[in-house]
Image (tube, rainbow, N blue to C red; front, side, top):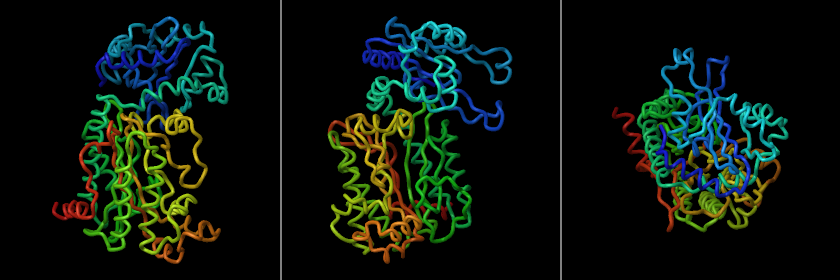
Length: 464
């Protein structure tokens, strides 16, 4: 599947205007064996390659010659032997034509082409897969260290500036991804019961994605240990009284991502203690959406969220002292050691391979403070940005012990009270928003978020 031909032509024309000279090299992704060559991982094309050329096929290389005003796609046509195994496949020229590319050749033709170029004129994006490094060594003679160092900052900035602003067709595709993502979360709420394993619930979530014709935008986080931010272990058994945290997203056939989180009780209802913490996270969630507008630095949104969380926990006796001073010192990070959100598009963490400092911070250095350093987006929001909103509260026993033993932020934390929650787990709700000219819009089908909405959906697990 691809967008219309004109879309890829327009994207490349806009990119070319950012350069006066040079050759722009796009390395497509290859297949990779799991335990031998023919048993491969699920294939995923490089996102920037998809953005400018739209072709999801292994072993492709593209080149835009700014000086000669020519665009190329190189790859080998299917052989009779390969067709026997994979079925009929279009030729490279046919695929290229769908993206508006009229100059094609096989990989040997690319080798001949690049051998005749001044390698200093070849600009490429940061390599992130083993085959990228091997190809840069083969074609340009660069070592691993050189291949990393010589990635073109000019190219990165141009691509990031363009991909950050989502076009109408991209917004529509992301919204399709979010719609299915919402269905995935509802499926878990309607299915999970005490006695099941995390793996069984995760399988139900994955089933929804596969049935919709796409796949996952990232490995599913489905856990009763929601205090661990990226926990992909699914071997625990659900028990009455547990909280189940699900972080999962759908990827459309065109490669666009959804990313949502929900937290619900394994029992029919939340406990009163769970409700107390849940309400605080929901207040922070609403505050983040309220503040996310054009011209607002998302770092400031994150810090305001920290204040809401800190104040909520203060009302329960877990924190103390001046809220602004506490957040400035990172005291809230005991409970919220990650960021309020990140950019999203063709990547669930959009363009993370290009570097967070350029993509998410517009070149401004990131903080090194615990918690704040994990914020992936710290720049002024612009219309066309798609951003996740995902405040949470997490009680990590090892982190609590570390802070208490080392007297970290002791002026702001009531450790005696915090330790009463050390087995609580974690809570996170997450939605995806589009920054508009006047504010923002929550994308896709609404996710059950309030306590009443979640408990209503949970009843359906018992109603069949």
